[in-house]
Image (tube, rainbow, N blue to C red; front, side):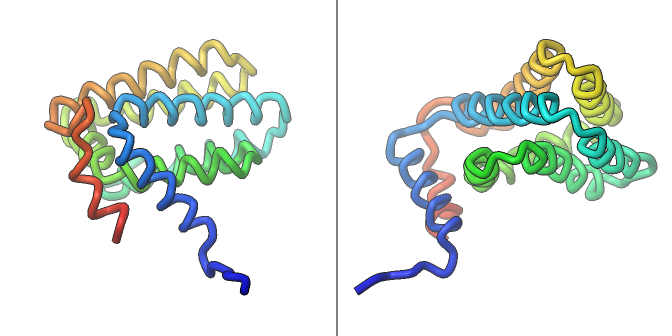
Length: 177
């Protein structure tokens, strides 16, 4: 007989996550994939040239003013997820969701440290700069901004003690749950 999954997308994300752990993936590889997906998303947004895409991102950025730490965390997550969703690429969205499942709790720690430090506005400024690159149709500038943004995340994750090599056993509970 046929088997129909209720949550096919969730099954795919779990399978990809399991393969990543079994193959001893690295945090740096997750961030490289995230950068590739986000840069591809930016490219798609620029190529389509729809002003409303930039407007959606600008609306998210407008909410940063006066936001507390928890709101900042949610806005950061929403900004990146929206960027990928605006790409119109289903695979980008699915793989990005898998990456989020693997790294989101640790990314939230990084964002929390950033927001609670003296560099609270850095996150907002980097997102604003990325939006500016999109509005200017400047893929090279967007690439430089994303590279810097995610490289800092990688350094912060490593400094938090998150594994930067092959030890991803801490993820196993998140994947199989």
